[in-house]
Image (cartoon, rainbow, N blue to C red; front, side, top):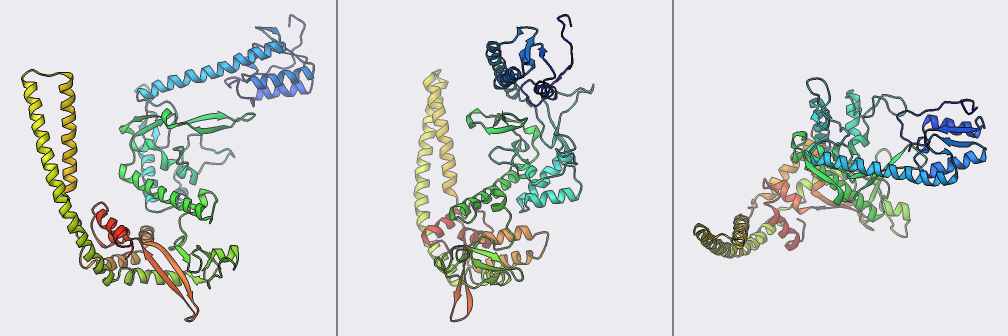
Length: 528
């Protein structure tokens, strides 16, 4: 070189951001400095070394320690003042660049376009000349079918682990957004986390709102982990989210989406209940795992009220968890009851004892008295609503007369809108009050028993076992197991959920049975 320097290394990091401290060329430069292979570093500008203020300061100190000078084409010999000043400028440039990029992407989203990223099930369409349509997405039919299948399987009770196991065994191609190989260089496969994801962050196939035609952007922001190439996601405040309706990208219908959300909510409730009781404060993967046994999580000890845990091998038995983990001073415990025996007792109880004809008859009688009182009140409500509707129609007619006469001011418009809104509300209230109370059949117990028989039979059918098991579990509030010393045998108390019992015994909808369930819970003790 003209100044007499001898070039011993030429190091570059093309197309890699200066904020990345793990660039190959930069790491090789650090090694050369520490090995004292060089005396001077020549670079276009300090930003070519790094755009991180802290990193630049550390690198400068390393160069001073090894007696290596820094020289740039713009500033010449570099001093600590240059490092402090340009380090701040370069870091500020990164922030400004990030803000500008974010503003630009916000504009893209507001225009109904994609701001980047591509979820499984979609692809970027192309123009006739083969060029990609920037900002556009279209559905991939084959992948959309897999997405719907995943939603259906999860809604009917399959766990994410079971779902991906089937997909992998069938050789279904997994999402390949990051390429066909994973970080270990092995072919990508379906994983449970791909399906389950994180509900709060909206990631994972079951939580991607784009599948119901709703694009949610800016829900997360990403922070670089210092000293690594890793980034962590942070949840933004909901007020900063951008939500745009994109119905053309819908893959899953609302009913199926809601079924999945309801099952997730049940799993969350179960996890929270377990944490409160101190049974299992472990991760969601443990507490949200699909019940291995038909009655898992429903059994309680008749001595202390604690949960019963499974132990042993052949046969598997249920023992009091408090007795096992906390000792006899907390609970004296009960002899273990085999799972097979308990399931047999419970299924028999569901068929023949839970809704006893005498209790059902008393319930129906009291419900009918209660409903007659409600009917009288409903007639009074309907009369009041009719009078209000007539008065509103009269006031609307007066407004229309004034408008036809040429009187139309801002106050006239406001009054018209108010009256129209009142008219619509009165119509809705009248329709709601006009609905007749649900009729509970006299043979409620017999119909219920037939339904439970059908569910019990379905337990032996692999194709319907999952749905039948969930339906049976939903009928049960809890199962209390006592030990009768005199008889030398277990005594099982089965408590049912009144709303689910009514659903199982009738063909009415849950909404129509709302009044009956409310009366049963608040006026009839909550159980039959």
